Image 1 (cartoon, rainbow, N blue to C red):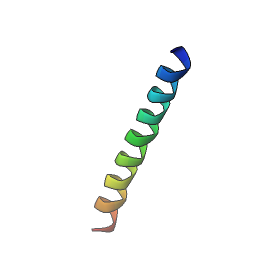
Image 2: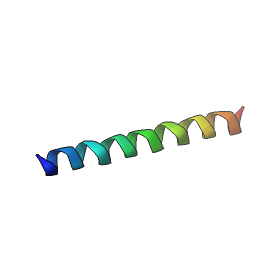
Image 3: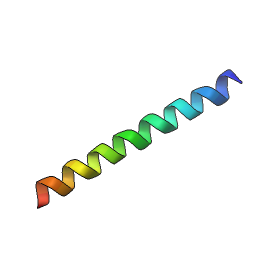
Length: 30
């Protein structure tokens, strides 16, 4: 259970980072 929740936390952090990066790149290119 601990490992599962850890994977979910890591996945959420990675997704959030990628999301923020995509927004920054889009604003920078426009």
